[in-house]
Every structure is written in C-alpha cells, then in structure tokens.
Amino acid sequence: MFFLRSSQLIQHRYVHSRGLGASPANPGAAPPRLPFSRVTQEVLAFFRTLLPGRTITDPDLLKSSNVDWLKTVEGNSEVLLRPKTTEEVSQILRHCSERNLAVCPQGGNTGLVGGSVPVFDEIILSTSLMNQVITFDNISGILTCQAGCVLENLSNYLEERDFIMPLDLGAKGSCHIGGNVSTNAGGLRLLRYGSLRGTVLGLEVVLADGRILKCLATLRKDNTGYDLKQLFIGSEGTLGVITAVSILCPRKPKAVNVAFLGCSSFQQLLETFQYCRGMLGEILSAFEFLDASCMSLLEKHLKLTNPITESPFYIVIETAGSNATHDEEKLHQFLEEVMTSSLVTDGTVATEATKIKALWSLRERVTEALTHEGYTYKYDISLPVEKIYDLVQDMRGHLGDMAKNVVGYGHVGDGNLHLNITSPSKDPALLAAIEPYVYEWTSEWKGSISAEHGLGLKKRNYIYYSKPSEAVALMGSIKAMLDPKGILNPYKTLPDNIH
View 1 (cartoon, helix red, strand yellow):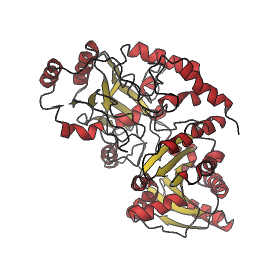
View 2 (tube, rainbow, N blue to C red; view 1 turned 30 degrees about the horizontal axis):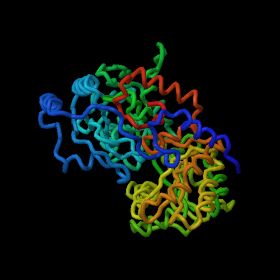
View 3 (cartoon, rainbow, N blue to C red; view 1 turned 90 degrees about the vertical axis):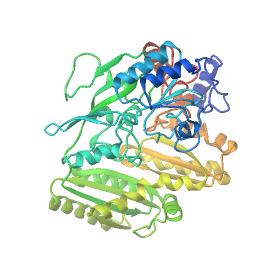
View 4 (cartoon, helix red, strand yellow; view 1 turned 120 degrees about the horizontal axis):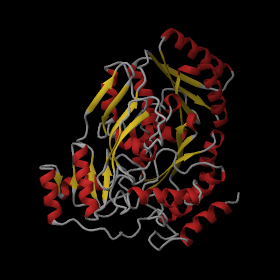
C-alpha cells in the first residue's frame, strides 16, 4: 500500500513552517515556548483579590493539575485558578489578555491527547467549582448547567427526575460537561442519541479578551444567523472557555437490557451488527466491541471475569425502551437468529442493574486495564466500519515483536476504533514505527485521525492527514480573529505552523 498523498501533506507542513514546531521526526513533541509573559507578584495579587482562597500556588497542590491522566504530558504551571462564576472567568481572561499571559482551561483532566494540561507555565483555569445546575425543564427535558458539573453527577440528578444524559463515557465519574463539549466527546450512546453537536442547544463562552458570549439558548429550533456554538464544540478550549451549557436530555428508558456476546471473526461481528440494526431498530442504544487481547488484560490486571466462552471478539449490545415485554421479545428473537446462524458463539443477557453494570465494565474498564501494561500509545480513529479491525491486524504485522500488545476496541455503530499499543516503557523506536504509519493508513481509507478524543498536544501536527490545508488555514484565521494574542491553550489542536 502506498501513502504518497499523506506523506506529501505532512512534508507540506514543515516546508511552510515558520520554525516554531517540533521536528519532522517527532511532530507530536512539544514546540518551543512562545513569547508569553510570566506570572509576577502583581499578577498574583490581582488573582488573590479576585479569587480569595481559590488562587493555588502550592506546588504539591498543583502537581495533579500539571499532569495528564495518562501521566504522559507534564507542564510547569505555577498558578491554578478556581473561579465559581462566568464573571470571574471573564475578569481572569481580560487580565491575562492585557498582560499576554497564556491560559490552559481545565475540566476533569481526563483527556488522552495532552489537551487539558499546560505544556509550559500556562496559568491553569479550572472549572471544578463551576458545578451548579442552573435550570431543568421537565417538560422539554432541557438541562442548563455550569461547565464544571461532573457528567456522572448530572446523570444522577436527571435520573431522579426520570431523564438521562445523552452522553455516557467511561470517565463519567471525573469528566466535566464543559470538557465533554469542548472536545465533542462521543461515548457509548452516540449510536442512539447522536453527537453533542446535535444535543447541545446553547453555550455560554468567555472569549480570550474577557467578552462573554451569551448563546445559552434552550430552543430546539433557532435559524437566526450563524450557529456560533458550533465553533466552540470540539475546539478544545482554543477559541474560548465554555462556562455553561444547555443540553437536550432524553427520557429515562423504562426497560434496559444488555447482551454480552462472543463472535469467532470480525466479519461475523459485522454481520451481527447488521442483524442488530434491522431487528432491534428503535430500541438499540449501543453496540460496542473488544477483542480477545482486551479481555485478557481485564482478567489479568483487574481480575474481571469473562461471563461467556472465550472468543476472538466480544460485543456489548444495549437496548433501551419503554416496554420491557416488547423489548425482551425483540432481543430474544434477535439472539435466536444470530445464534442459530452461528454468527454468535455464546452470550449472556442482563436486565438487573448490578449485572448490567458488571457487563458494561468489561468494555468501560479496558482503558484502566491498559494502564497496568506499561506505556500505552493510544489512537482514536474513525474508519469505514468494515475496515475497523483491519488496522489492528495490519499494525500487529507492521510492528511484529516491537510492541508488547496491540489491542482494539470501540464503537462499531459509529465506526470508531480505539487502537492501543503497549510497551514496557516509553520507546522512541516503537513510536517511530507507529507514527506516521497509523495516520497514513487511516488517511488512505479516508478516515479521521481523531474520532472523539481531539488533537490536543500529541496529534496537532497530524491534522493534515484528515483535513486539507485550506481548511486548516481557515481554522487558523478563526483562531486569530477570536484569540489574536493566542493565549488560549497555545500549542494545542492547531499545527505549529498556524500559531
């Protein structure tokens, strides 16, 4: 297979670079520090007056906010700010803009691409205390809340009112809704409820110069001019700081079933997916997969138990509806069909909450299991559904015994593969073998190098594998218009030659 087009694109980036980026040998490395000002005692005095008791400078308290969840990126920020209101965020950014101080917005710090921690000494602006529900309309199902609300807390709040969040993630116990929106997180329910670009109705955003953009609409329809909120969904905190969100929430399903199934090949898994969509239709809410290597890690490191016969591939199917009898009948008919046709080799079904949670943990805790394998190189790829696992197999062949493990899992319904490659420790030779091969492969099949994790620090310079140079240049123009000094999350999302 030849990747000439993709290779030309990555070379194009360096030919047109202004010398600010990482070397072509390692485009994911941190660039040199840009000429931002440094925090002075005068600046600290202003913050301490504005945020008494919420301006953190103790190195021990700062440590966890300077390091990402994977412990692969670490910054050196000397200041952590914890505002409670949009007005406080506005004053912080106005002050930073006037003094050319770089800022790193931070939510739950659960990101996987180095987007939520400083690269150098950027001021950390944490939304952790902006955690209040503002309003909830139990007729329309529209929730309005501050950006620092933890996703699981919002889920619990809504379930008490017979509603659910349209978004569900493995990191729900830590991640913030503002961070979810900023990265356009996908998650486990996208197949049923769609992406945040559809469910988010409005945003309140503070721009780099401190202006507050109040677009916190609670309308399903609003066709008056440009839909500005879409600029900030998925922009990873580079265009503004999201301070509040209004989001459309579905009613809580009265009946939930989870099936955990085994398949002997990925082709059979895909055929099962086709049957699943056709036979379960409107009650299908999730279709996830993991391979046998993932299961081995779950058993080895987390001591989880495989509830079915050992298989090369496993599927998690969730149905959610309003009539338990109707849903169970449809699921039974589907399972009978796929078992009779030998597409599925074994399976189990859970209808009770504790058992449902146990089955879901086999999918949700794969990331956790991987952390026990040493150093993990993580790739979040969108591909045509039929090509998803080909990348895993080709990567295994390409790397040979250089890698400790090459595993694949993800969202079949969304065409989203999570490819993870482990080694005992950080290995530059292994990384050089993985990148840009993984991006060239993805580009060749017209995929996306970031399905839901964003680009952050690690993947910013690979954007050309998924977007044409004209589109990237336009993104740079938008960044320059909204943040002319470039203080918001510098070194992230956009390639080095754009900054």
